[in-house]
Amino acid sequence: MVRKLLIALLLLNIFDGAATFYGLQFRMIEEVNPLMKALYEESPFLFLFFKLEFQYCYYFLLERI
Picture 1 (tube, one colour):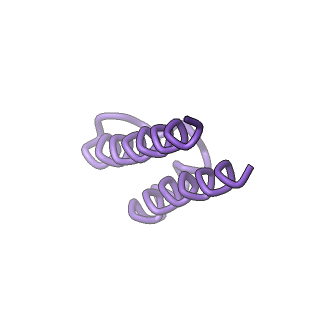
Picture 2 (tube, helix red, strand yellow):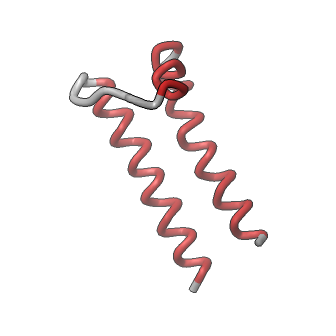
Picture 3 (cartoon, one colour):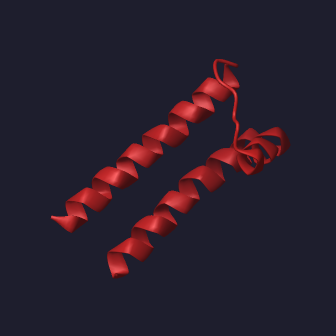
């Protein structure tokens, strides 16, 4: 049961990252998190990498608990 919830959380976070990336690319939204805003201004793909990479790290850490 917990594993299914972790997978659902991972998928929702991946969707969030993709939707945020899309919204930022087409100037439909603005990033308010200062760290993520700086990453996006440096490189949109660096922003997406960090957003998705943290989700995988959370998943693996939570799975081990």
